[in-house]
Image (cartoon, rainbow, N blue to C red; front, side):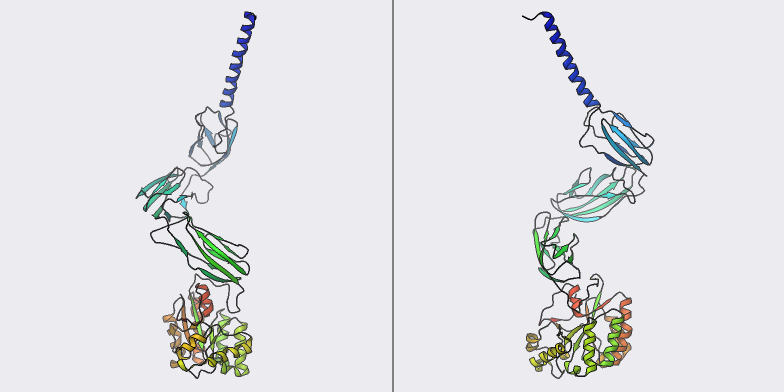
Length: 472
């Protein structure tokens, strides 16, 4: 049987143990608290305040330089002057960087669309500053979206909304948001596409006008063949094929098969698809004096053209050398029949094939476009031309006027992006007009190209036997 003295000692030890546990808990709570969700680095502007999260616990705070940033017992940080200091919150250290007060606020996209159910976070910023806190969001409009204190948006119904973003010192910027229906389907600008190695391309996503999907992703099935970025810009890497897949935020998809091939000699890879282009075409040549003059102008101005050759004219060595010069400098060869003696239904298969054979014999390349004599068509031509049939939408009538000034003004008055201009390289007046109109078009922002280049950069796949008047 234990004595009363032993019980007293046991009670005393138990009480002391309870006191030690309570004291330890107090120390951990008061001195050692380390909020997991709290920031370890803060960017603030002069005059800005920030409430450090403590989840209701008592935390000991201390500023190492109150002239830059101070903190009160409730965890309210006040930025006083530009500079950097540290603040202690229990055993946690917070680096505080104080910047000049914002002079303005901006946002990358001041208008965009979302689909119902889509989420997106706004990213406002202070120009020329790393300041990234203190933003407040206010909402007006059709109640089409909700937004939280961190700028996280959720589209809830079709309509329009306006978000105004403010800094702590009342600088503001606004963002207009349209909410459309969730897409029920999407498509790409092409189901299949051929790109030349060394060139670039672009593919567009099509969504119904009443629908929207801001966060539509695009990816390549094989980036060793072709790469694609978020803007739909395509970069061929190697010869082969790959599939581009686009996916909306709600899982709707579309695909396009891309074939990457070596570029032909008559395609340039440094043209800008966003700038206007016009195709120059010349019939009935070659004719050494005038054709060479035209070639010189094209070469000097880094332009191209399609020459529809009458093969019978290449029997002379000088004219045959014009063909070789065309190929050497990347100009496209076209078939204009062997001797230009037949029109429409009178054109024979031999008229077509003899021209192609002759061009192959001279330079090793056959024609990749066809233009019927006089523009007259027939079933035989469509079936046997073995190339796209290229007509025109601007006829200079140079064969009729034989006037360089009229040809010059005819082109400038009617030229449009995607146009195909008809001329003849056998007339001195045409060569003279070209000498003046090419530099003028280049100065006006046009890229003078051949038909194949025009089609390539406009994203059109020309088909054999089909007629084209322009390519837009």
